[in-house]
Length: 319
Image (cartoon, rainbow, N blue to C red; front, side, top):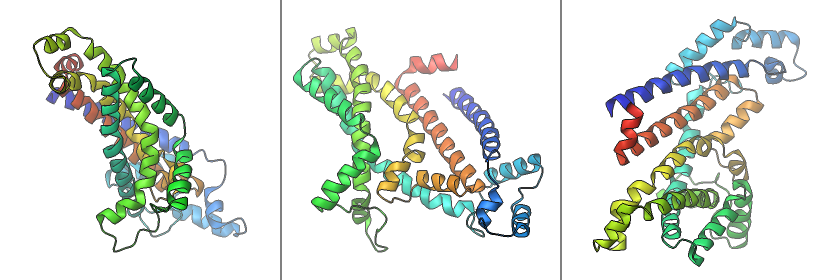
């Protein structure tokens, strides 16, 4: 296991360095003058030239790349272009925490529901229950999260008034459960998309396990269905589910721009989008790299969990 962790970490560091080069290159090919956009279309050229010099945009590219490396190793201590005097870290931190709350609540809902739904569908393969779960999952997963968000916002937030329709007006003195009410609607929109996807992955993995010889032997020994599922099915059937969930973490943290816009939620995806529009190079670079690190850590955690669940996979990976 130690060798596996070391290899994955080295690969992640190498991948992060390549991504740094790619992000740096892409953010230097903006078609317009960044300083002109920040200063405004009617600002005098002297002001634009001075701003270019203050932001370091006239420095040689190797020097700019070295500055990016230093900012990464100091956890984004550089200043934002669009908000002078405000460090990137001060902007990334709250947005990352908001996204973490939304993702965490969503996963607490859709992971148990999807796993249970997938196991039940596999256990009752080709039954009405199976077809119902698969059909509902396909229908819900085919609707984009921001469309689901609009529908939930209108019917539950506006028409019924059961939950707040936006997520930006949380009172400062709100308690834990009160705060959850403000992010429950966007979380439900994510649940609708991911339930069908994860449930179908779980179902596909569980069908093979239910039809395996060792599962039939467990039933012949007189084990109860719940014991067979707990001791034999879950450990083997959930490996694809774990892998898929790990690969989706990057999107969950940085790709929910439409959903965050619908609910006016101050998450990481919206912050990256605003940084790209500004354009705010330090903030954009820090946001993209933050999502990349989350993706790599989630993938690493998924690989380690799969290796723990299946020693044969660990042996194959370390070989």
